Length: 152
Image 1 (tube, rainbow, N blue to C red):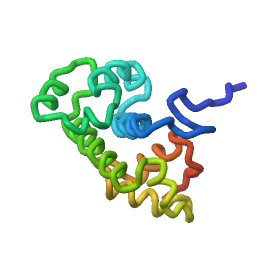
Image 2 (cartoon, one colour):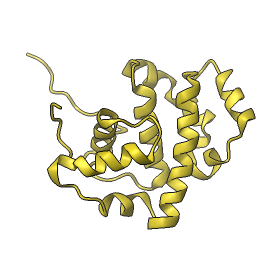
Image 3 (spheres, rainbow, N blue to C red):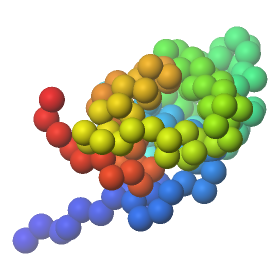
Image 4 (tube, rainbow, N blue to C red):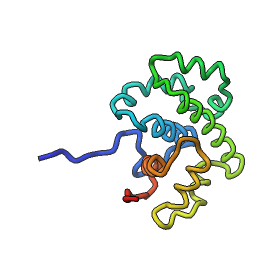
């Protein structure tokens, strides 16, 4: 008899993240998870929080090339330059969304969620770095959206 699977605590399944920084953290986690084990990312996540200023969008959006080099030399996180640069770019996108819509939740709420979120997935992929259809679906699921898994 197998145990029932429960989503990890960082997945908001019956609620929504409390603020844009929490949405940003989940998006970053999904990006860093791609191609790696959940155990590895879970183990390193406290160090990710420290390295990325507790996922403060305002602070990460201001990261410079020097900050990137510091992150690349930090053995306590995954040192993937493309994912680090994507995180900084995505923080800037969150800032743009906040200016345009007021919050990330308002942005998501305003998108067409028909056809199993097809339009939302496309918009996320166009707006954010290193977000393809699979990572967009996992992200949406992790923030409490009713996206369902589908075979493409």
